[in-house]
Length: 477
Image (cartoon, rainbow, N blue to C red; front, side):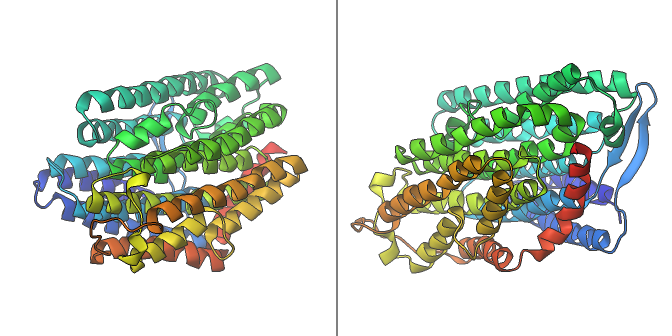
């Protein structure tokens, strides 16, 4: 089996979901997601046994473009995140009433296809196509099924679309220039192309604009909170849980190995920007009354630290960053789902209108507590493994980077515990609050279980990603 089977499953699954009709669409989308996840596990098993599941065939002759997919451990780790979260995100929506469900779920599966393709592509032109394809479904999901009035959300979603699309244009220009030098878009050819220091600077900055907006890194974050707030919760989960990882992954896969000298020269500047985002996101999160905006700024703080790890150019920093990408994906999806569960019961996202939920929903509050502790990197959770490795990598560059980055743990503990106290504890809300039903409980138990399991036994992920990262770091030295 090669990875084209997985992509075909998702693409055909998106079409099948749309054609199945509004009533069957959620179930078909869930089935497609489960099949894709099973195929991913099979691909990972093949990879660990030494079987190359990649695929390369010439697509065009002039220009020289290949349909090339690279199925190494790093790519498969992010594909695993995508295909595991997709069915869980679909399942999480079963408690909501969704109009035109066939279109909605068809777009969700198609977005999963595009993001999976982005992680697997090893031809720059193909990679760019998948990168842009992922933007189309989330635009319509957020615009047509989002919160508030159409006019209010249109402004936020249009800003998100223009920002991300504009940043991607710079990346496309960089790829075209690299093609003129290498005669190919293939990843291995771009790694070998000889660039002057000036050329590396411009290529690096062109990629940086695309990735800094997508992640986002301070000060390119201004679209994030409003988009997360206005998008439906499924859209917010896709954005925060998977889509922003496209930028973080691409830094390691594309940007740094292609322009290693520029990465070294600009490392301090970009790490400082990333760390500013860590502190800024934490401070602004404290001022939020809307729980979705609260989690949006919390996410900004966390991904700032991940970005700092990727730009540390150390094996430990990059490995910690990948750990954190995966951990953050599971945790943030769980937190946004809890916000949606509360909204279903109370019809509010205002933190001040919540309180006392723990007395009525002990299971929800317990799972919420696990995900909250994972968010702040408590030992025993996968986030702790990621943060420790990431901060260790930063300390190899400058101990103060690790100190400032480590402040995210203190800030995170403060604002998350403060939020938990207001939402779950405090005075009891007069409205009744039903505890989790089976579907809600299943989704949260899986998310919390993965975070705890990998926190205790991270070796499977370590074995999967380390060879790829060692190879990438070798291109930097």
